[in-house]
Length: 434
Image (cartoon, rainbow, N blue to C red; front, side):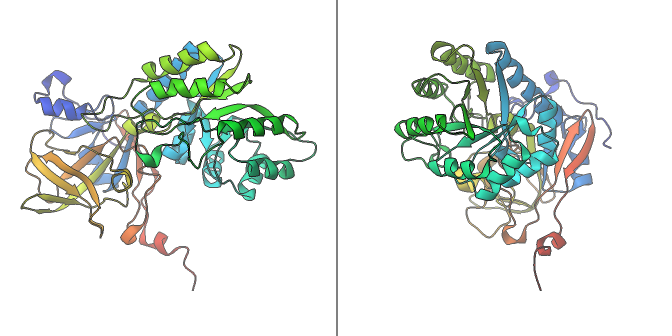
């Protein structure tokens, strides 16, 4: 158990750059009397000492507050509705359990995510099962578990489900629609444009809808649309609602997710309320008033609740100054995959400094955490904190160069607990056969 730390009042934080940095950390993050960051009431110095580095720290209260903000905001605008966490953003049993406790449904996109959700005690009837290439085994698993909704992504899903669902049974399904909308986001996370591997074009969707309406084992509840991730403009969401409205009246409209998170000082994503105003405003204009609406926030649900802690291993002076830490692309692949920008701080000397290249320890030139990030007099042994790592960093963590995947630590009211342990060298060999 971590000892609660007395924190400085916000007005005592003098530096504007310090304030800007703190604005990227979970709400309530402050500085302790020793100048170290305090997250969820826990000093990062204590956290690093107890759990080691790298470590992914989650402010539990911030995550719960975000879940309530989404659920309450949607219910106030459209009472017959629910929020399903797009769990690929953070497929961790403790996260599933926490969000289910807050009344959220869960969206899973693989047998692995389904198994984790079930292990967390999530009600199977609340599950939304996705995937552009669901195997027979995964579909059987979903049907056997009693998954509430399975999303049809192709004609083969219909063929397989009609074979797998018992004669006496009935499986509720949605049809995923590709509306031909390309939002302004990285190509790797855009999913609604023509040529996407996900979903069915509008003509294909109409064919699938007609076929499902004649099925004796599959019950067509409605349609699904999701146009991408890290979207910083609300207008494409409204267009996606209008696109699915043209397919007819249904009991359920799953409008997906995609709202962006604020990773850097220059990012200005819409607030949850602005996003819901646009999305539900479009729904009020074009969808049946008695339909159920589902939304699937992922990145914007969990990103800002997470912080990764590293230790500086070495500092190489020159042009540029390289500050190398004990993690990197093994625990944060977003930089290499998407060119995502992250900010960073020396966790015990927050704010100021000269631009440095914060890099990892893996044998790739692309193994960077953040280029040109200001760090004040970085030294070996310094503790580095990188905010907004709650989304996809855990999902994409890997064993490149034999790296050990880091622990996940929940912090709340000055108490810290590991919910995922650090990997060991024995773990690396566990699946090897003689």
